[in-house]
Image (cartoon, rainbow, N blue to C red; front, top):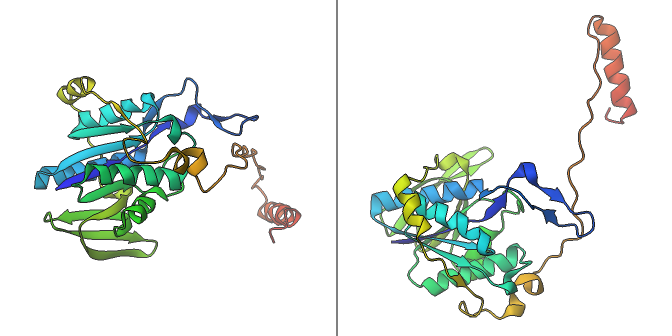
Length: 261
C-alpha cells in the first residue's frame, strides 16, 4: 500500500501581517510550521504504515524554504518526500494547487490513498483535498475521524455537525482529516538526523507534464480582490451589577442602539 500525504508550510499566526499595497501576506522573519491539520493527516498515514507496512510519501508545493516541513515529515517516519517547486507554480489558488498535487500523485503511479488535512491554517478553503480527488477521478471523503484498512478497502467514520456516519470505501481514494482523528507524534532524534541528509531536488512543472499557463497565477480560477486583518475588538462596556434593574435597562438600551433587538 502506498499512501501520499499532502502538506503545506504555513507562517506562525503571530507574525503574519497584510501588506496594504499588495494585499498579500507579509511573513518576513516569521516562524514556519507544518499546517496543523496536515500533521494529523501525516499521523493517520504513519499509523496505517505501522499496521500495514505501507509506504508513505509526502508532497508539498512551494519554494526551496518549504523543504523544511518535508524534512520534519521524514523525521517523523515518512519514507519519501517530494518538493514541487517551480516559478510557474507561484500564485496558484486552491484549484491550481490541486492540479499540481494530483499530477504528482499520477507521476508516482502506484498510489492507493491520498490523505490531506481538512483545510489550511492560512487559506482556510478546505478545497484542495476534494480538488485532488476530482483531478484524479477518485472518490473523496472529508472530515474523517477514524480510519481502518485491510490494504484493499477502508472503514471510515466521518463527522457531521449532528453526529457521524460509518462508511466502507474501496481504494484508491482521497481523504481529509481533522484534529479529532489522532495526536501527531514527534520526530525522533535518529529520524531528524536522517532527514537532514535527504536530497530534495525540486520537481518542476515540466517534470509533471504541466504546461506553465495551466498552473500558478495564470492557471488559477480565482483572483484575490482584497485582504485585510480582522478588526480588533473593542473593550466593550462594563455594567455595574449592583442594581439589576438599572443594569438590565442599560443592556437593553445598548442592544436597541445597535439594532440587535
